[in-house]
Image (tube, rainbow, N blue to C red; front, side, top):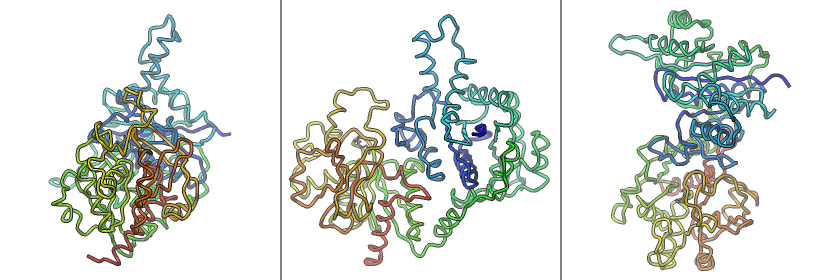
Amino acid sequence: MALVKYIFVTGGVASSLGKGIISASLAKLLQARGFSVTIQKLDPYINVDPGTLNPYEHGECFVTDDGAETDLDLGHYERYLNVPTSQANNVTTGRIYQEVINKERRGDYLGETVQVIPHITDEIKRRIKLLGNSGKFDFIITEIGGTVGDIESLPYIEAVRQMRWEMGTSCLVIHLTLVPYLAAAGELKTKPTQHSVKALLELGVQPDIIVCRTEKHLNEGMRNKIALFCNVDPTAVIESIDADSIYDVPLLMHEEKLDLEVLDKMKMPSEKEPDLNSWYEFLHKLKNPEGEITIGLIGKYVELKDAYKSINESFVHAGAVNQYKVKVKSIHSEHISPETVAESLKGLHGILVAPGFGSRGIEGKIEAIRYARESKIPFLGICLGMQCAVIEFGRNVLGLTGAHSTEMAPDTPFPVIDIMEEQKQIHEMGGTMRLGSYPCKIEQGTKTFEVYNTDLISERHRHRYEFNNKFLAEYQKSGMKTPGINTLNNLVEIIELADHPWFIGVQFHPEYKSTVANPHPLFVNFVKAAIIYSKNKPD
Ligand code: GLN
């Protein structure tokens, strides 16, 4: 096999410029040219993984098949490439130091002083090369979190410098910067880009390609100026203009010839044009909707754009399949009460109750579910959303007054959701939930079977609590079916209502598996049900 190629993506000037989207877009273009590509994110914080981070800190926590709790950028990588990522695709400073300190305690460095260079940088390089050594990939794209100049990212940039030196053209650095438009001056400014490249140069890294995030087109003169001041070819100055949709970015990068520039610099064949037909088809359907529906997303982090990232993206994919625009209306569950529920949920064609932890806003979620059940509005409950559906049914249909989850009410008389047996002895918080993929058997003749059209599925989990099987018979007798069971341990993974056009709750997270090439059937079908509902009941 040819030598594995390593591409690094660093960022400068400001955070949130979209390094993840640029990395995923480049990966998509290389994949569409027939190369095998994976993307890795290196995060400079000390948490061992983002699993313990509050969504206010870092947005959604994404979960991989192998149970890694990761940065949300891995979700983008999977959505673009349709290739699963793993633990190796997300590494934090905490994990690097943990490994080095464990080695030191074991005596692996006996006699040596353990230092940032070479021990920490060696461990960073080992983690980068782990993916390359797997033999599965032609390209490893590594996104360095944070902004050049941050104290935290220094060891990562140093590792990049060393790899660049060791590997020559098998290693390439792309620097993403901002070219701001100053309205008062009426022009774009290149100075921040120059400064940011200088900061990188001070650390010994010369970028090969500069991607300029901008809200207005760069002209020839500006490209030449950036090229001159930053020691790159004018063809290596790539414009990344604000796009309507993140899914436009691969095409924009292709127009700017980012993929060609990369292949050229890495001495790789580039005769074949990328095959982007299915991507174009997806975009066509996305941009030419035949109608519009509104789904209510009931959660407690609604003011945060990134807290339910994968759910929002799953609706984009499902909307495209149905060629319908899906407007997602975020509704704070703390604002929903028996008095306000009808008003709060007015005009919705579907209701999704989001995953979550803790008791804040829980009664609003339960109330929204009662409304969806009684009004026969399509409903999808994910993880905590499914648990709330079980609580609601227990209280309002089975008459189990005070039914609850022991997460919120340890002393409830009816613990219809209870902690999993294997979780009872666990006291540490990091990486200890039921995480990653588990198989689930689907019962034929159910709505869920119609959705999946197969009797064995595998979905990703992230929770500690579960449906309490002591109540199973009572629920089933009264019309709550349990069409999805984990046959290994008998856990209820899916619930649905017999007497409702579309009411499904899942203990797992379908949103982690929806991709452009493979939109998740639950979202596709839920959107379809909402479209039918909107046609029968126009508001
Ligand atoms: N808090 C619930 C549990 O731990 C649900 C978790 C979730 O929604 N991801 O079981």
